Amino acid sequence: MANQGALAGIRVLDLSRVLAGPSCGQLFADLGAQVIKVEDRGGDENRNWLPVVDGRGANFMSVNRGKRGMTLNLKSPGGQRILEALIKRADVLLENFPPGTAKRLGLAWERTSAVNPDLVHVSITGYGSRGPLRDRPGYDNMVQAFSGMMAMTGEHDRGPARLGPSVIDLGTGALAFAGACAALVARQQGRARGQHVEASLLQTALSQLGYHFTAYTMAGVVPQRTGSAVWHIVPYQCFRTADGWILAGATNDAAWQRMATVLGAAELAADPAYSTARDRSTRRLELIAKLEPYFLSRGTAEWARLFDEAKVACSPVQDIAQLLAHPQVEALGMVQEVDDGRGGTLRLCGPPIEMSATPTAPGGRPPDLGEHTDEILRTELGLDDAAIAALRAEEAI
Image (cartoon, rainbow, N blue to C red; front, side):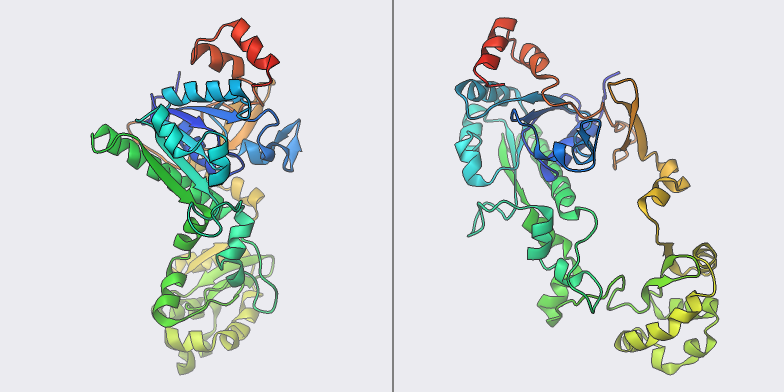
């Protein structure tokens, strides 16, 4: 049965590549929209990013479930004709080309809105559509460096470090999805027809700085690298245990007393030098050095149990294998199996949104390159075999 999610009936034309744009398109698919993934004849570059298993790149597979896929050469006359025909039928167009490239490929807002005045055109860029860097390509790692995130990530005595996941890419995809949905609501309510929705990795990163942004604008605080620690809440970081690592923290003065009690550090709990949050922050390195030996006396699971019982914020430090085996992840249904089209199954991450009346669903597996090209040209545009063959001979598809 087809996904009858909240966005059933919405047509999305996804011409984006790599992570940010495709993750936005995947959210549309999860909520029931019909999403056509358009790639050039060489395919999305992340199809070939490691690891690649049986010809399928894990990066590509992570953000393209539930879509139908076709190839289209936008540099050919035939490709441009097909693009225009697809735009006329679309509710949402999603692309992440630099502004100059988008214009050369016929994907400028001025053109797409003329073709379809009701179109919600979503543009994702690295650094925004204005300013000196407007045409600079942007990847998550680059923007982590540019935005200050790397400067504040890592151990204090080491160089800058990358955040593990591509949080800026995926955050940009989510924000672009929210903007597109808002534009669809405005259209449905008659307050606008189509409109241009813009999101950029840099703007996402600036918003994700959160309290670090206002700590600087209000107090001139430039965050330094503190490893797993939060500089203004002490202790609140990872500690080595007898068999691993645990993150534990005292988010207020009462929690500090509970934490010290669980650790058996009565002398630290009673020491007025550490009684307030400001005192502990000022003496962070000194206090952490005194706490570290206590954690080595027990294993991670035992500390987690004791801290949970005492209502002290904590979490075991898990790798991804431990995470995906955890019963909490199983309870949320976040590891879902789909048919891989080759007689087996793929284990994919499930939709991150739950809805009671219009449930989300992971849809089908991500498409192989050009898998649905002929089907889309027939069912969406009514082309016959001869017309499709002519397009293929022209190298438009």
